[in-house]
Length: 119
Length: 294
Image 1 (cartoon, rainbow over the protein chains, first blue to last red):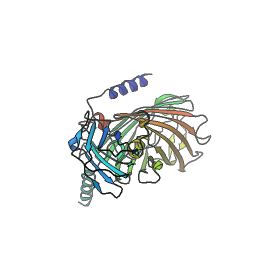
Image 2: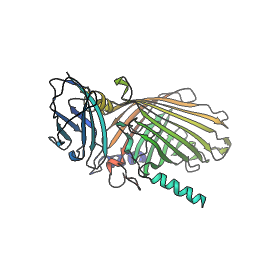
Image 3: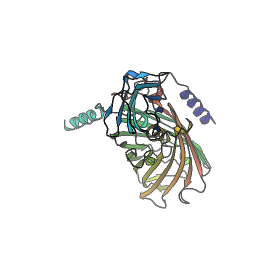
Image 4: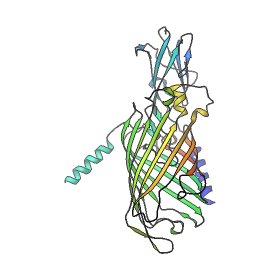
């Protein structure tokens, strides 16, 4: 019984530990991961599950032939977990590749990639 | 002098600045900590508690792992057992693991290690042997993010192979009789289908947020006595389950299905709470003692 109580108490202690930050993982994106959109989007919006430093993050956009599509400087969105980049070209129908690298508030780095389609 | 040079070279090798990926992040892949088999990634982590119930025996255990360098970690494990033969602690176990190879592009990782079960530190009445066992091991992990078709990309496989060598051929059991202590080869495999990977890298199916944190998995364990085995037979289990991984911790549950009658009679279960110390304590306990983590 004592072992159970000890385990629960220790578990609760760690669950409540703070302040802490964590690796930022992509929670939602617009255009959506693997999705198809029309009309062509004019911005990329990445929402992470942790606040990130927008100025230390990196996002690139490439077309199906892996030619870079120009983006604006990354900006913080409605909160610190959202980064936004304006797409500075008109996207024609096809497949587009997004690559991102995020730096969370504790300086942990994460990365990812996905595609979306413009109909 | 020669030994000094070798030692210095080994130290430099271990301490050399190299990409380190905390609690299972390798490129785009996150390998959650598996419940029943050893995962391949070096991390600052705490599994507390792991509770299993199987064949009229309940076990409560904890494991703490600490990175010494970004690629080298040591671990300490203790387990308390309650069953028909009474209650008590099993032998203390320690381990050391080195993440030898990491490929972010190929979501691959390969590690080597040595685990030691310290004989005589546990209670004999519950079967803790008085013989120390040393088990060299290797571990691997591979994500299928570079695979085609898309539905295969969230899949990952991790595995381990260890060979436990007792320091003595015989041990005394609880009644004082000598019994053979076998060399045991232990195999572990885990097949994981990562819904976080699916949502973030392949296709967002607009599932509820909590679902996007789930990883269904099946773990396979097999312990095969190899030498000095006496009457011992191979034992193992198939463990299907689920892991929910959050930002600071994960929780998991699995069924334990024995593979033969030597492994057990009934289906059991294991549950675990597992904490990512690098995220809970990024500036203290969650950092490697030497070198830069990330």
